[in-house]
Length: 403
Image (tube, rainbow, N blue to C red; front, side, top):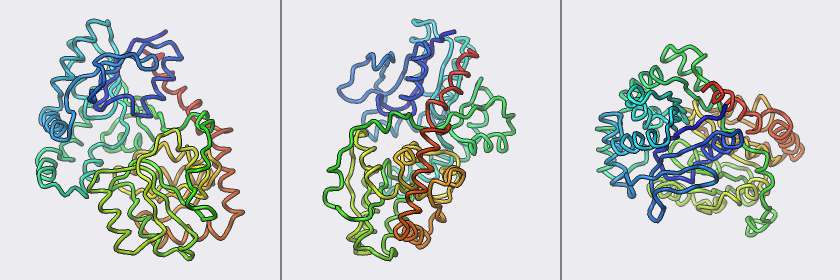
C-alpha cells in the first residue's frame, strides 16, 4: 500500500546521491515523498523536484551559521527550526512516517514521535560519532577547532546514537559492518536493522563518454580518485605513494573532486614537498562526467583510511568503478576489502601504507592481463549479479510495505 512520508536532510537538495536513489525507487512504487532540507541562496522555499515535494528552511547559508546550528543540535539533539517545520508539514499533509537521513536530525523527529503519532526510520549513512573524530583532523581555523572540541564530542554522540536507535522504529544501515557494530556496541537484535547499501544503478554506464577528459595524459597509465576529499579518504596516502612507483613518468594519479581549503592545501603541500609531477588536481567535475573519468582511466582507487568511520560505511564510487570494467585498488578498510576480495575485482593495499599502495600500483601496471580479469569480474558483479541498486532497492521497498 502506498505510503506518504516526510524525509529529513540536514543539507541542501538536490545533491545527495543516496537520497536521489532511495526516493526514485519509492516514487516508482507509488509512495508520496515530502523532503524537508536546508535552503541554499536562490532556491525556492517549496519546489517539486523530480516528483519530490521539497520544503526548504533557512538554517545556515554559510559556515558560521551552520556551525551555530551544529552547536544547538549537539547541546539538545533537537533542531528548533526543523522541529517547527516538521510539525507544520505533518499536520498539513497528514503524514505519519518520518525517514531521517543520518543521526543529527534523528532527535528532532523522535521529539515529535509521540505527540504526532509518528513512525520513525533512522537511515544511518555513516558512523557519525566516529566521523566527528576524523572530519576535523586537518582543520586549522582556531574557532572551528574550539567549537568542535567543546560541542562535537564523539563519545556524547555515541551515547545519543544508542538512545536514538532504541527509540526508532527501524534503523537502516548502509553496510553489513555497520549493522554488526550497532548490534554489538548497543546490544540490538538484527531484526530492527536493515541494510540498504550504496550500490549504483545500471544506468550509470549510459552516461555519454567524453574522450577529452584525459587529453593531456594520452598514453599514460592513469589512476583516478573521484569524489569528496577529507582526512579520512586517504588521498594523502595515494599521493605519497606516487613517489614510490617504479615508473613515475608513466604512472599518473588524477584527483577529481574537492574538499575544504585546509584539506586541499594539505594535499597540495605534499605534492610540493615531494616534488611530484605525476599528480593532477582537476577539482570539481559534474557527475555526468564521472563515468568518463572512471572508464577511461586504467585503475579506480579508493584509498580510505581504516578507522571507526570508514570501516562502517561504503562509497558509491566502489560500485560505480566496478561497473566501468576497470580494476579497483582499495585500502584494507573493512567494507572495501570484503567486497573487492569477494568479487575478485581489484587489489587491496594496507590502509595508510604508501609503500604498499605503490607496490599494488606496480603490480597492475606491469600486468595488463590481471587488469582485464579484475575489471571483468567487477563489471559482472555489478551488472549481472546482485551488486546494483536495482537489486538493493527491494529491501527498501519491503521495509516501506510494512508501514
